[in-house]
Amino acid sequence: MYKTGKSIVLLLFLLSCQNTPAHHPDTRAQVNEARGLVKQFAGTLKPMLVEHLKKDGPTGAIRVCREAAPRIARELSERSGWIVKRVSHRARNKDTAVPDAWETKVLQKFLALREKGADADTLEYHEMIRLADGTEEFRYMKAQKTLKLCLTCHGKNVSPDVLQSLNTLYPEDAARGFELGDVRGAFSLTFKPDDGPKRDSN
Ligand code: HEC
Image 1 (cartoon, protein in one colour):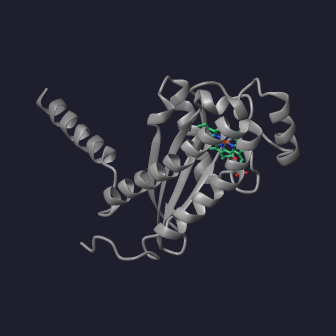
Image 2 (cartoon, helix red, strand yellow):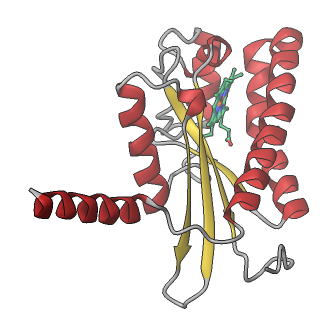
């Protein structure tokens, strides 16, 4: 009896060790920074999109997604030292938005959680990755939820004029047919602590 108790304690101890993520000292700061960058990205793009949808209609607003989104990503990257992008398991822009192996794995996690009923807005993931050359890379992803406004260009009933524009600009478009609440894609951010300015040197 006593012996069983002891092994249960040991087992619990081992399990708790396993469940404790190996926290890099900078991880919390980097998660906060990544969240801030995502807020800036979404907080700049979405109002622009809403404004142009109202002013120019959806075909005009396609330009915002096509030109403003990569520009905002580039500006944020230059300013912060992070690589900031958007990716999707069903990419519209095959040149910029096709996920790499790590991003694919995280998107699959998001999709599985969404399937179980999670709100896509709450899904985020981060990991410090040790690369083959011994350096580390911090990676962060946050899912992008399909809202009503997104359906105009990513939904099941896209109007003929929008479809025509999309077909011309993105002949291999896979970003249609989404439903409200679906994971549309994700913001994906990478930071290489070894390259960037020294943070929290403790
Ligand atoms: C006016 C049409 C339009 C609306 C509305 C729209 N998008 Fe897009 N979206 C696009 C276009 C066009 C692209 C491709 C941009 C490019 O070439 O980089 C795109 C690309 C994306 C991407 C990048 C990945 C990929 O597939 O290329 C994500 C993520 C995305 N949209 C999410 C959303 C979400 C979330 C909403 C709603 C908040 C939304 N979009 C609303 C037209 C639209």
